[in-house]
Length: 289
Ligand code: R5P
Image (cartoon, rainbow, N blue to C red; front, side, top):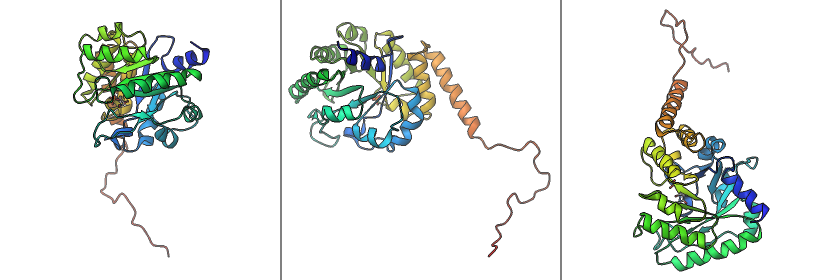
């Protein structure tokens, strides 16, 4: 593996502990304005300093991420279908390697749809993307997408992850499942776990904990962070597990503490000596004209 590729990988999976916290905000590429991600700039701004890398599309990167950031970008380069279209699995590579380099991408991400109608097309596209990305020392993250008709069990996910790794993906993103350690053991490259649909905070923390215990390098989490009632508290609590080796209880306590602090800060401040007489608090506006 070339120096550049290793270096980019080490920006995403931290070499000191082999862990990664990726914040996923790429959902709009097929879902449009996803709930609570309607304004990506506002969502990303307070969370950026707590993630190791950001997974996004070029449109969101150019419009919604400050150019001064030193957070590595995992750039989604596949697309072509929408949630209301005929088949989500019909994806192609939509971003050129030149544009990815202009965007200073630390990795390229694309989905493969193993077992779907467009399985062949997406797997071949992964191989081709690896060919091209390797030329420039850019790692490729393969997303093992699951459709309505596809399972999320260890048998299916092991198959999908292994195929991605065999095509040369440098990281594979998949889902947590029962017997997840089997998925990890049969995949020769690092696995990162997607958060999935919004679930209660404590369950998302448990998912994070289980994923790491099962051998994943970390999580690539979106909805369970920015759809949380308190996204900053949530990402910090997820981080507490990924990089602080916290238990689920410790991480959830942190979440509650941060939520309480936020509530206290947002309470109106009362003066220590409130006025004894009931005077009007605001002077009437006088029109000086
Ligand atoms: C989904 O298509 C995207 O690739 C997301 O990045 C991925 O699903 C992770 O986001 P979430 O935690 O919301 O599932």
